[in-house]
Image 1 (cartoon, rainbow, N blue to C red):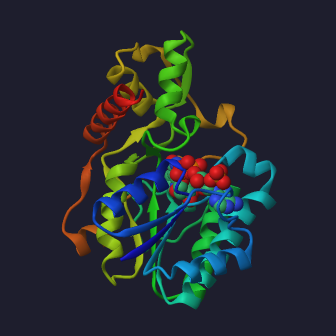
Image 2 (cartoon, rainbow, N blue to C red; image 1 turned 45 degrees about the vertical axis):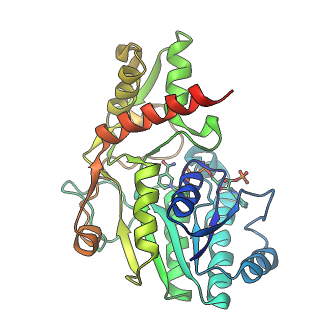
Length: 291
Ligand SMILES: NC(=O)c1ccc[n+]([C@@H]2O[C@H](COP(=O)([O-])OP(=O)(O)OC[C@H]3O[C@@H](n4cnc5c(N)ncnc54)[C@H](OP(=O)(O)O)[C@@H]3O)[C@@H](O)[C@H]2O)c1
């Protein structure tokens, strides 16, 4: 297949491009604005039609929740208008589209896990812009997969975008950090998600999927797990309330209980603890091999 990946300089997009390439597909990476600005309708249309992909994986997006709460116009432009442009281009080229959406489309009030058929109700601008993007796709182009995921960890892309490196850098410098203990979700390793997307993109099982590693955690749990893996003191991660320090409202419990993925593919992604350990090991191997 010919696969076009947007946001390929990002935490997730990088792994997606690597995973499709490793599986033998021909991959074109749009690294970001420097290649094509997804806000430019004509530039997006020209880029997609000239490459003529079989599949676009649209992983470009804007995810600074607090900044977006103060600048909603920018959030809607990148997340929603950008997705509209990409969807029109996919329709014109008759290619499949995978869109990366988020657990933030839910309000976090459900206690037994969200499945794909639950009604979204976002509580912040980021979640609203992602939900609006989903609606644009559903209304315009049938050959789509909407994949909602949550709290991504990985080590590729811009270092400052990886919360793993942020935690390690702060604790190594002797600074303690606070991480919310009242916000629970299913964390996900970008490499595991990317491999699953390769499988998904080869099917025609269009629709909406909730896809994360298995198990649940708060930001505090996962930050302490990172500290342990890095040989640092987990007690330097101080539990906090999400609402106390943040501008955008946070949904409390966006744990997924997926129906579609296990039904279609017959398995679940590994537990996040195991995935985090793998991720840490791989990141260290990469750092050791970088001159
Ligand atoms: N990270 C998470 O925890 C998480 C959880 C759930 C869902 N998601 C979703 O997953 C997707 C990928 O997230 P990520 O964490 O990989 O994000 P990221 O590391 O911040 O990367 C975002 C990518 O989008 C590109 N981009 C931003 N604005 C653009 C524009 N106007 N035109 C073209 N490219 C643009 C960026 O490139 P430049 O900045 O170089 O332009 C970068 O390559 C997003 O849609 C996000 O909403 C993320």
